[in-house]
Length: 454
Image 1: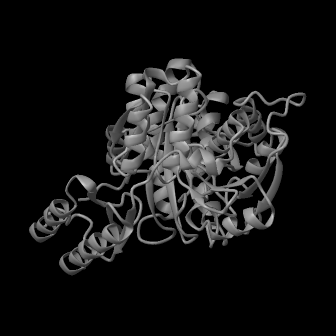
Image 2: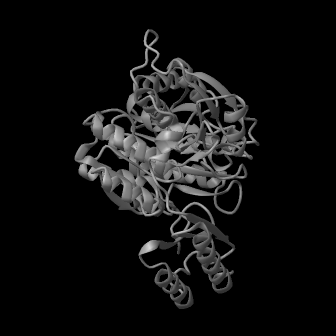
Image 3: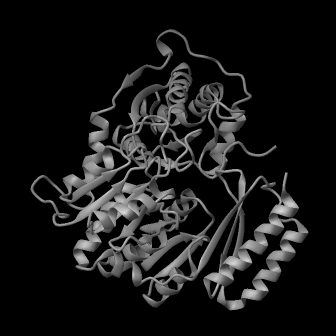
């Protein structure tokens, strides 16, 4: 049987065959048994924080999660709508035993997900997730009377703590507004950062132009945010902004748009921040952690700058595991998950936007100039849907991959991987020219589709 947990929690069609209110309730109870035990060492009852993004299904899934936790004897603080990294931060700030976030991140509105953060605001490793999944089928003794968990709502003061943390990461105070003089366009994806993102940038002194910050439960990620930056690209140019930033639905990602309207991806943001941190002596081990999806151009440029690069599997939690194991300070993904270890335990889109804005101010360069310093090999990514995600070892598929690698030689690379959050296989190809990358990717995608269609 396939694991219930993917690369970032349990995710799927909300109220579909997997992500239901029943699952949320039962999964919360199971998590209480596994994660709540940490509270016993404190001499108090376990406490959990619960948050969600603004999609409609999050309302009933968060309620079911809260019910499951309280029924298992865990006290719950309902944080309402806030970014995923905000919940991760507040696990520690509110002295919680663990946290639960209801979000499908960049996925379309009809999807939703359940992800957990353990003590310290860190995502779970596979072993802990497997223990939670195993508990779903076990009998347990339900508490009664005064032993049931209590629920309180904190949907204002806690979020304010998170905003203060964000602006404090760049030294901003009411008397010191380091981003004054910058005009920044912000696309909130009608998601969880619709309040937090613009507010943090304004408090840091920026003149902020805001789009897609009116969530109605149905419009999250709809032709907006980091997965659809076209509107932001047009707004940056029309508004004469210095640059723009785009978050995804739960704001753990940040992509940017330079003043010319060109997209600046996570690799370019990471490279820019890594060079800045190294120059200031704040890049531990002079090392940047990225995934296998990062562009080869970034790896080459980092080597030229004397910065080591460590690659991991896809998923910001794998990046974080590597960072924590070796005390590295910066890591992330091309998709815009960027972890700045001094200030966060997970990818934080608003934090990344603030850090990038500070580097634009500090360097005196435009974002376009900073991004242009980081070369990119032409890259093509094709998502092949409706196929068997476990079929990447099919002999004909492997044969096609080998042929593609032989064709590209030392001038490119090929990567096939099953998505951990969506029902598809990703075909990624880098090559010496865009035409070469496109041609190889299309050929491979056709083989995958032919061989693995369900």
